[in-house]
Image (cartoon, rainbow, N blue to C red; front, side):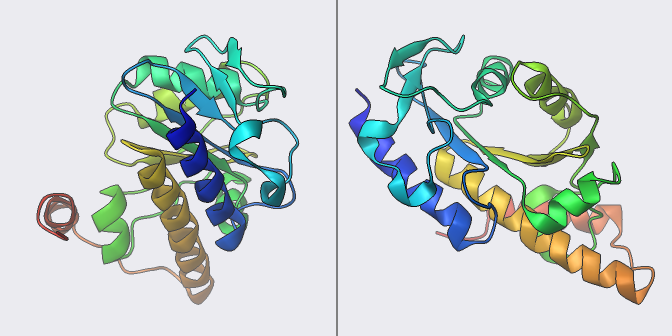
Length: 215
């Protein structure tokens, strides 16, 4: 079932440790199949190098297991909540990447101080409130935090990063870019108060990147 999507997720999960976004078994990637509305997600507690297509878990939008020999990720209910409330999203990534999570421990958004961040996020990466793991609460905070924003990612207080996209690959890219810009912002704040970018220029940069840049 959804074998191509499972294989894709195996490779995308390996991008997380390759980009220093996770430690040990923390973090996960999921993908929704637009045709069936089924979700493929990482099994709980399996190390990234040990993941195979066969170990992936398929669930419905309510988090019920449809196929798989393992327990699904402990974040499954929140992933499914996001998919139900953000129909444009077909990929979700959760990480505890270091610099971004450092901002989250202060309940602090990552400020938009680079053109690259303007391109990808169209403004600050916001930080939502605190929620416990295991139910839909984290998903609820993510949806509330990103409502009306252009950012494909947000922080959760004292927890980490949730990033999303129209595909799982785009969600992974957003997670990578979140950590990269968090590290830049961290270093910039150590130097003092960063220079700001005018809101109108952020709008122009975001529009060009989203609608003109690339092939």
